Image (cartoon, rainbow, N blue to C red; front, side):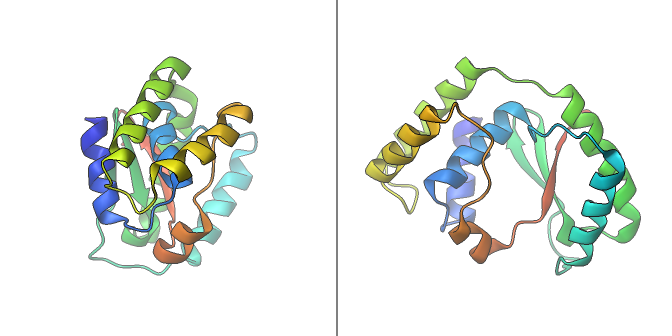
Length: 163
């Protein structure tokens, strides 16, 4: 399933960089990975991000990441969807767990698919990124600048158990 997700994203997002592939696998394994300390501030930020997002009623709201995890794209939502999304995100952030061994195994799959040439980056670029990433302790990462400029990502991660 993870291989299918990686292949799908490589085709849908041809400007992905190593960082974006790692982010996808991180989200697949650990969900959003966010620890929300101030729910009111989170809700304000979500409303502000929604207001700044170009809306597209034809956009697909749910993008599967595998492992029961979805990206919910703000561009596809109406204002009435924000509170249910906030609740689903908060519940998902508290509930979803993963494991480092499973994450590392999925990174090996990313290496294999990169060697096959399905991404715009090559194995040398991925290995260089992963060396620094491992030294940093495998943290949650943001999308690359190239990805942000090409796709303007605005989404929240939810677990399918909390639609």
